Length: 501
Image (cartoon, rainbow, N blue to C red; front, side, top):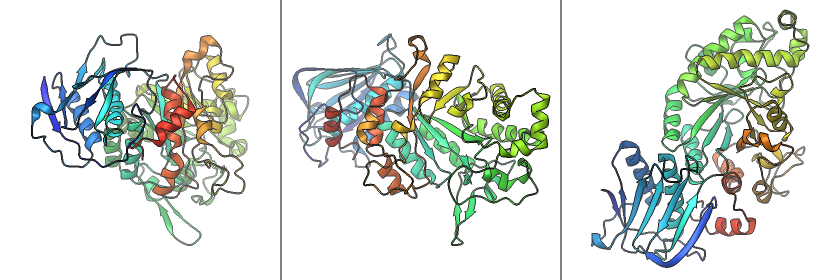
């Protein structure tokens, strides 16, 4: 057994009546007799000293004590132990994310059969300690926990409004506290191209900036070095980063940088400063496909995860109907209409990603022109596209806007555009059930989970971003993790949580 950190608590936080205060709610909590008093400090120990276990332990210490100086108790024998133990046979019937916590009068034992599970056990233990820090005692108990869904995602659009790398890391930090595990990073759209592609420098020289009505030049992008740092930062916290490179629509920024990508390359191109669906669309030409494979080469090198999101939503076909190139390709490939041409376009890119060992994700509209067997469908308008995809045998992620769109106002009185008739309350988010709907029992295993989406047309700064996601992200985390749900109890835990303040 290796001693890692010897710590004493010196916080001043409000006293909370509810002690077992964890979000998302664990699968099972069994209360025991007695309390563990940790007034004299805490000693974190591990069974083993490999690098991954040490990294988890360091992060655990940082999450417990933040930037405060770690103070060593006068008597080391008085400190209570927190023991982290990897048990390969533990919870063999659970998932890779399962863990257990046992609180005794003199120690806390956190066990899991994977590093990921141990990491999540540390997040729950952090909430237990920080929410009880004024009294410096927690009741003895036994927690066993496993998530309901394996895909627990949070999305961020950085195209309509750009957020720097440090804000993205703070976004990831919040996900960590709530055991969310997929960060969907929307990196390209009509209003901006936000990822450095070395082979095509005009994508960021031109495509990352727009001139607003007042003459102000707005924009920004992430260098490849910044992206590597964020991907590594997320990976250390067991979060997979999924980039979205939007195609064939939502492509105005790329076309403004390289007009040859358009079906009308001789017409003037500009990056839009307004929202809504634009008519720009990639021309299905050899030069466009060559460009996109070059882009994906660099994207795949930056993102080691299994998935690349290729969009596929809101792609107007007017330009294709008028394009000799598009019509000739349709005739050559015996495609009946432009929806089938979009499927051909996406399938072409999907097949290329497969040569890189990647799988493609697309928004719900991709079901219209036909589905390949391996593509994942992200159902956003409602659940119908997801249901249709499961009938075809495809895996899906549910993210219907009626439950999952955090750019919607939280209540009717919130400031919103005149056309915005919808709002999304905390209770509505909490009611989200990815598998609800007309999904056959034998197809439900195809529903990987769900995701909250944050589009930023009207989210202009970090303060507003935080306002839009909090506290709804806590409700989403519990909706995706917990089977044991009660909204009143959730509100009590949320109100009494110092971790999420």
